[in-house]
Length: 331
Ligand SMILES: O=C(O)CCC(=O)C(=O)O
Ligand SMILES: [Fe+2]
Image (cartoon, rainbow, N blue to C red):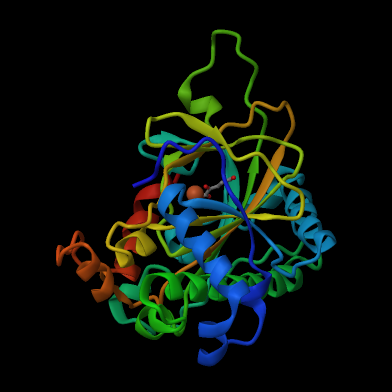
């Protein structure tokens, strides 16, 4: 359960980027320190800033720059890459096409998913099958994003190993159960500024992204570093700003990690309101379990809570398909 936190902690994860081996992990003090901080943040806030992740600042900026350049095109060009059921829900979504809890969000986005080849997960995978719709402009978009996705996958795997040490005393415990072959989602998002308050506004036009939790294990957000728009809800219902810190990712716990931890960790509600007057970009990378993983509370977490299993198992792919097919409005 999230606490009444007032701010979001910053964690330097560099000790986790070294080579992992059992001897190393049990004896290394700097690893133990990071693991403790991760554990606290996942319990108290469900959110933390990540520094020491190894991606150079200019590359994080480049990723946002090409995202902005894509959205800056005339709509006809963007609509050539439009997401639909027939594209496996991959591609471009125009403003107000994404729905969060019944309300259209004031954002445009492109969704990319790890490729699912025909027949790969039987009926379960069919909905999301197909290649990604990579924009042809900016020309190096695909190449840069694929490189970036691989880096985010490595960073997330290392963070999850730290979390696995905290929860189960072994860095590879979670991985060996549910994320040997992790699925990923990348969502590049653009938020036009909210119209200034003139009495005409309604929820539909001003919320960039409605309050929600993320579905998977961990999310890495690369947000514009000069615009405050992301907010995180604490236990007493206050919205705490996740102000940008240059060069960091914001990392948050998803529903699957909450289930694994038997509710010890929180997938905290968050939302986006861009009242800065400027166009905001955020690139969200979602690190997920294996597509067909059955995710259930770790035995050790159940034991630690007096043998009470707080969640039934959930199949990640089913959970995702259910969300994806309910989140979009199609013309
Ligand atoms: O734009 C942001 O800062 C957050 C986006 C987000 O929460 C999401 O796409 O799940
Ligand atoms: Fe989110």
